Length: 149
Image (tube, rainbow, N blue to C red; front, top):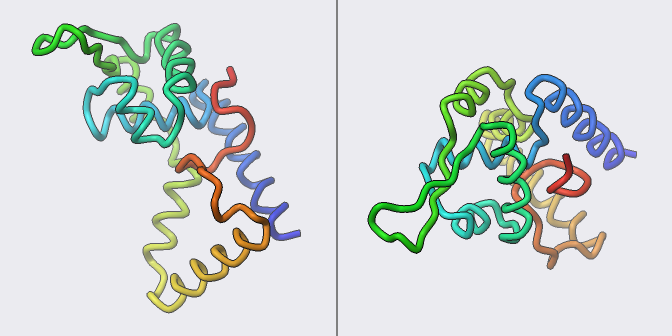
């Protein structure tokens, strides 16, 4: 029941975020990483987000269609293509509401250390019970295909 509530909260927040920004959570996270880390290659972005390069390429294709990112050949190394957020992309980021992940991180950081430890231990145990402790998972709260529209 509690896991279902968490999944449902994630789904509802994802839909609300999509209505407000016009972006999926993976698209928004890609924009946030580019904004915080600076321009980078598709491979570096994929590594940073713990996603495959093909998935990130698909996400970036959609962001480019919306004119929120652009790819530019590196001046230092012509073999590299760097991804940049556009001015329009940065403006959208500024107006976007906080992600559920950001809210969770902020609330978690405000907790006492003993409470954080209990939550981490409980989540680790749940992960083990579900057989998910060895799964590679993207560092974002989201459900469904990551490269969806």
